[in-house]
Image (tube, rainbow, N blue to C red; front, side, top):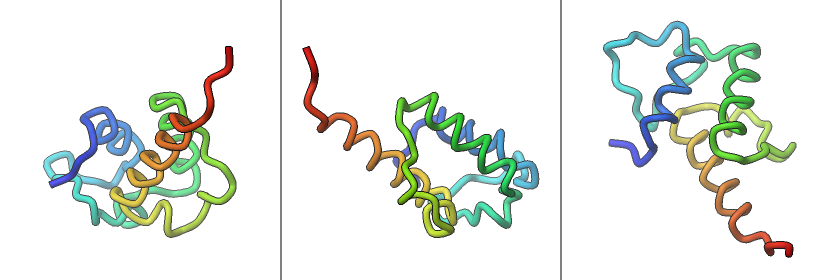
Length: 90
């Protein structure tokens, strides 16, 4: 069972061409084995940044961050939390 929202699962599936439609995405789903290559990774990052209003900084670009569905979701959550902690201007 995962704690991510339906949109996250949909964005992952859009970028995992080898992941069977009937299969369940789990936190430990190996994204490389599911078809996430460098082109799909860039597409996924752009989609996540747009959907969740975050920006993946250089420190997040590692094989660990994008190894599993759960690892990517944790990164998105961290980035969202960081954004919320920023002081509001105005």
